[in-house]
Amino acid sequence: MTDIWIMRIGHRPQRDKRVTTHVALSSRALGAKGIYVDTADNVLEGNIKSVVERFGGDFEIRTGVNWKDIIKNFDGIVVHLTMYGQRFDEALEKIPSDKNMIIIVGAEKVPPEVYERADMNVSVGNQPHSEIAALSIFMDRLTGGKALYESRNGRFNVIPNERGKTVVEISR
Ligand code: SAM
Image (cartoon, rainbow, N blue to C red; front, side):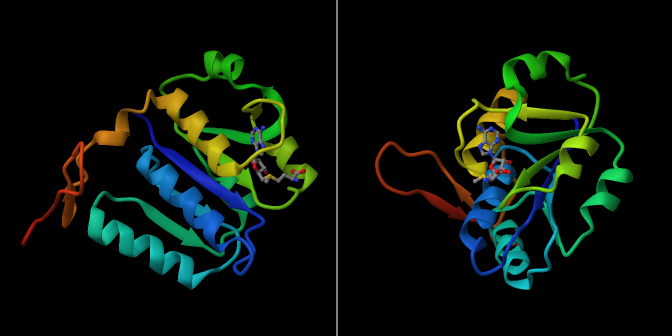
């Protein structure tokens, strides 16, 4: 699988802390390499790094980045998720499978420049809903959900259990 990165635009640390955290966690669970967040947020960075430290994988988070620079220097396809975009089932047919991808999701209204700079503006339905839902559905269809049960070699491993919780702690 090629690398998938997320670019979160318009993050407001107080107002969006839970939603941006869930954007990061969902994209990690679905196999993204990492997330860029435009506004600096040390608390968010610390929370995500703590999850990676406990549950494994090499997911990266960088906050306080300039989204235009990231996109300009990105070697791959830039997909902007927006309710106004083309249908995602049609978009997926046009995306080459050998290219890295950066997926932009907004918090508040994104600047018009995002629509112009993206290679594709893609909708997950043409109704307004959630960036967490749109991103998760899109990534699941893109990857076939392959990463969901992959081992991350973490300190804690969760064993699927029909009833209750089974967590194995690996001592290193
Ligand atoms: N009101 C904002 C606007 O006009 O752009 C949208 C805010 S929405 C809660 C936040 C983000 O969720 C959007 O920037 C977009 O990335 C994503 N989103 C919401 N609905 C979507 C949809 N139907 N398809 C794709 N992405 C969607």
